[in-house]
Length: 393
Image (tube, rainbow, N blue to C red; front, side, top):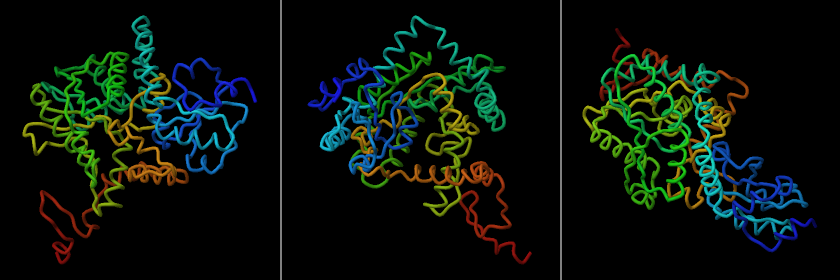
């Protein structure tokens, strides 16, 4: 047994600082979050392993290294580390989980960025050069094609703290820098009940990227936490309502959300599979609850894979959904499964795309190629129509 294992074999947790002091060759990082959360970001070198298979001894783990178990908040990983110790491994849980590690990382980077303005220049330059065609051009294409921005607009760019909304903020800043007509921007961030750690992560990223946030607070997370049926749907609806009202109070006539191409096609398929209807996310929608307000989606043509590449190439880390459900590690299912229908559909599309790369695009374009002569029924302006109405004509 190596010296490093001797030092840790009686301990249950390791702090972020203690982990940083160890050599990468001495540790084996095991991230047990679901694969979507893992893809959003993890510790360098971490392996995304199924927690149920780990408990059952389904992996050949290195006996000469310290096994560090990682979940979102360092709670579920405690039990897994105990299980691995019972299997004979030297295993500990990362105290505070990925969230605390991320906060510490961003604090260091923000302090460094204050002295190194070159990093921000590189991040912004990547959108004008390397990712011009995959991201910036598609952003501008959606803005122009759907007339998302017009002279005199005051747009509330809604920041959730994730990769999509932060990218959207940078794209809007660049658009404003080169605008051919006057419009205004407010970078609006609603705090629906974040814990202090997630709030700090959002603030640190905003400082790093020079995005001037306008914060306001609500108690949405607390309101929906005990709702058993469709809490995520209710949360999203309440968040949008608060954003509309706050944006209007600030003199805005539009809110911009960071939904991208993949969100659009996943919503298309989810609606068909689970709602029995054909509906999609529209690139812009007039609010029915806040007259005079409009919702726009300028990332409509931008693929999530390209957003991830931009994020990773620039060494950026963002929070995911930071509600009370994820705060209690509910995404860290011990059997490796998830309750997310969106994740199920995301995996289904990815599986189909393995044998036919046109599948994602076909799902997207299907909503642009609806032939009303070949559908049984359709609704327009709230009125239902049947193919029988025109059948004998």
